[in-house]
Figure 1 (cartoon, rainbow, N blue to C red):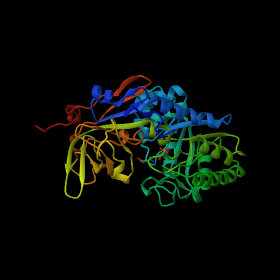
Figure 2 (figure 1 turned 45 degrees about the vertical axis):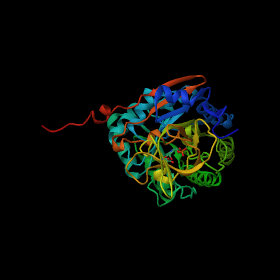
Figure 3 (figure 1 turned 90 degrees about the vertical axis):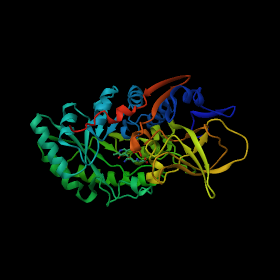
Figure 4 (figure 1 turned 60 degrees about the horizontal axis):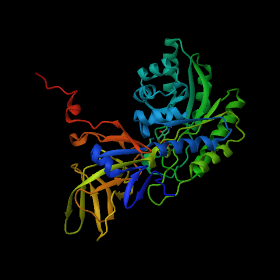
Length: 417
Ligand SMILES: Cc1ncc(COP(=O)(O)O)c(C=O)c1O
Ligand SMILES: N[C@@H](CCCC[NH3+])C(=O)O
């Protein structure tokens, strides 16, 4: 089975589950994000099943794709959530998610966000600095609350991924340095409005090997043993997210291999295990549907100028990320090597370089593996309304976010009189 399990060709036409993508483009226009609910369901259930009888909580990382329909689907499957802002907290609530299964990560939680999360009785704060811990204690005290806390510890492990998405090395801004962890746990234990509940780490994203996860887990277990020796009990161990997906030729571990490896590495820790997967839950469950506008044959390069751009899908421009680009209707005939570019006025505005395709103007293309960090990192640069989003479920398709209008884009702006 291909890694795009819900997107398959039938008679040379690409389908999302039971629906031809040409029909989706005709009904909703382009650019359009298309998600497969079956693919998201399968990913969640693969995580859940792989844990077997092990006490676990899956906290989907909302930042990967925060559409309410995606969150609602996962909430109905039983997922918890990992949030990094008050905005994500509000989305989880709006989507019917359970804050008793939600962890709050992030290096810069505002006091207001902390208040909202305390008032909502969030499951746990993943605290990233001593100063945040002190502030949390003070705010909880003012509210007559006790804040449940994990310290996010930076284990100094090389995740062997793109430097912009590596988070667990000592030079990264994330987490509390491992050497400081015991001292800060001892402080936390003394603070009247803090309840030490867990231990957390997250070493980076798009990891394609198991070894760094296991290295980090071992470091966490060593620390846990030292903490327990000083009378600090840790009720849950949160090993973060980060499992990679296949974009091109990489072969990341499967969800089952990953979960089984985490369970095996932590088998002597009987308490609850948490993970925070984002990309591996939704990445290959989505594509970005775009239409070829102009073809331009310059002396040394062929350009296909499409109606999606870096504002819709930033990953290629930001990380030089590779996304497979497929024709919606396969053509026969001579192929050419194309640069697939958008209309934005930046040289970095590309979706793919050097793609071998047979194209005519008006053709539809799919930028694959776009379900994670696609729409959630989109912007309105060049005053471009954001794409429409739809979710396919078998032979039904649901609009889950309407296309923005130009009026939406300046609705909050004012010209001084
Ligand atoms: C704290 C935290 N948890 C979970 C995730 C999700 O990571 P991924 O999408 O790689 O699974 C991230 C993003 O890297 C994160 O920063
Ligand atoms: N935005 C990144 C992932 C970062 C995860 C956040 N810590 C990407 O698109 O690959």
